[in-house]
Image 1 (spheres, rainbow, N blue to C red):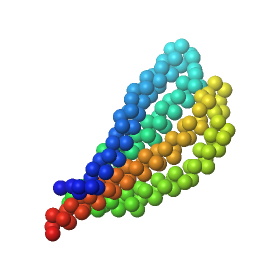
Image 2: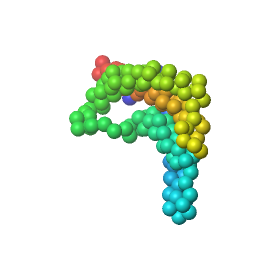
Image 3: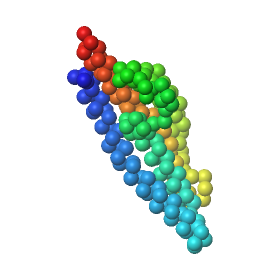
Image 4: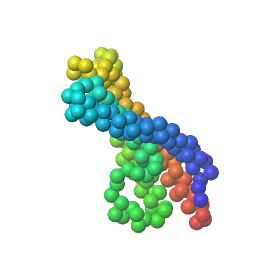
Length: 175
């Protein structure tokens, strides 16, 4: 059973992570192709490109940072669930609610707060690679940090709402 207001709201928030996650998942293909190209060019043709090597970092960072909320949405994140897997649905919902409210949201809010000046400074300088021939968009790469934190905050709110909805629905069933 689900809560009539909280569950649909959580589902709408989940959609944000789903859309972005499905879009950035394609970057894994680009990451493999660019990495393969760098290796082939280096070892077969003795040709290297700093920009291509840096693009691997950009692709990996984008995939990781923008895919984190999607991973959380699908419950595929790393966790120690020695106890969790044996819990009842209500106890799992309580753990998820407390985890979102006491751990995920505070950490993401802190990350958003501490990264703001860092990213603003990069934008003010239009920071680029320190390497000759490197990519000129370091400031865009750094922007992914607060963006990832914001996406995780949205997903944390979704998780908290869904968990609260499960707990309230369960309490309603009991009464």
